[in-house]
Image 1: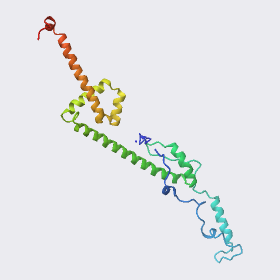
Image 2 (image 1 turned 90 degrees about the horizontal axis):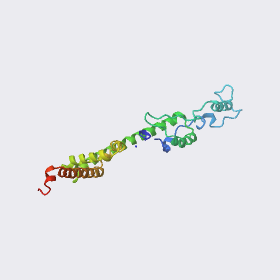
Image 3 (image 1 turned 60 degrees about the vertical axis):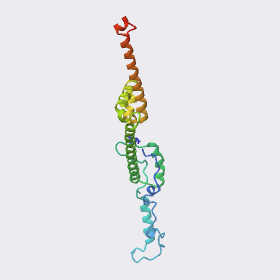
Image 4 (image 1 turned 180 degrees about the vertical axis):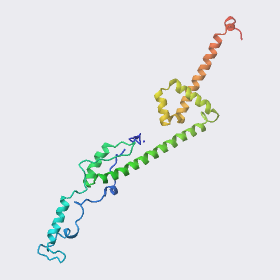
Length: 226
């Protein structure tokens, strides 16, 4: 699953933006010129009935100068992108995204919108993976119950034997992993631990019987007694 706990390993933004996402709006410096600027300005001696000074070309040049001097919403010196709580920003993915965003002259706000979309998709994907794994482990339980060897009327005994074997030979770390991953429900793991536990129980029973015979005073005195 994201680095998201994790993360969703998490939780993680390790893919380049799609074409539709990358096609963000243009800035003042990259937008197509309009009005007089698009025509290159009227000749200096052209008459303009709406211009009392008759200087349309100069105004067009002035507008272009204003655009150049203005602060266009382009790429910042460094993108400062945020991710939802519980997620960790993938620095490797950001390193790949940064030059693409700069090539498109995306502002930090525009880049953040793309990051938000990606974070949402990664969160949804992690949730679907968790739900799928939960369904898988639930099916394992059903498979154990239906198994001819360890399920059915043998289920309680099989589980008891499996738990005894795990308690005898398993480490705390193994038990924790079985609980965390659901692997403790896997039919084949239940089967092998149940067999081990059954062998342990049979061995204990045989040994107890032997100890009972050897410890019987009457048999020691009369060894041939049936």
